[in-house]
View 1 (cartoon, each protein chain N blue to C red):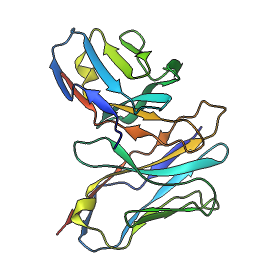
View 2 (cartoon, rainbow over the protein chains, first blue to last red):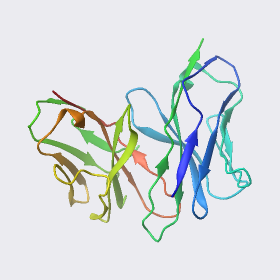
View 3 (tube, each protein chain N blue to C red):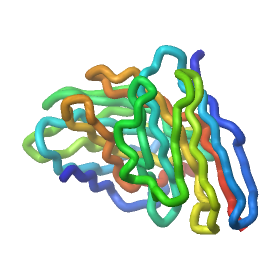
Length: 114
Length: 114
């Protein structure tokens, strides 16, 4: 089956620090990969995605590169802000003749301190 | 700015009572998902619909949970009878199911069963 393993949290960083949240996956077939973000009291929002190997997804200063050789999709940001405090979910989906379902990681809680 | 809406946002009820949660997907989206989020289990897919037809409800306790889409603008999730272990945040998400596989989440219904 498909699975996503995320870096254990919580992660606490100072403002302007460099962020990496690790994500590795196991998938049958060729997945599309996603990062979702959940701010306090809200639903999940799509942050970025990549649909094939070596693609780089980017949004709001965050980046992640689809690495097929290491089955990874690590999330990075060069300089975090207090407003980036949230829970981050890595997810994948594999094409399955219309019966596709997202497989989520457990989430990584990120807190940025001023 | 199109959004998924959910009602109610918060619900407190006593064990044994019926609970109905409602979701209005984004206009034009043909796929609707129901998720449940708890600290212990994380994010779980309960059921999903394509073009109002149920595709998969294997994540849902069948004896007490039911999900329907009476029309394209309304999805419902019902629990009868409710139990304390049903306390969670329930999210609805919608998407137009092409190869982008993007899902747009509502703000959630926080359910507390006492």
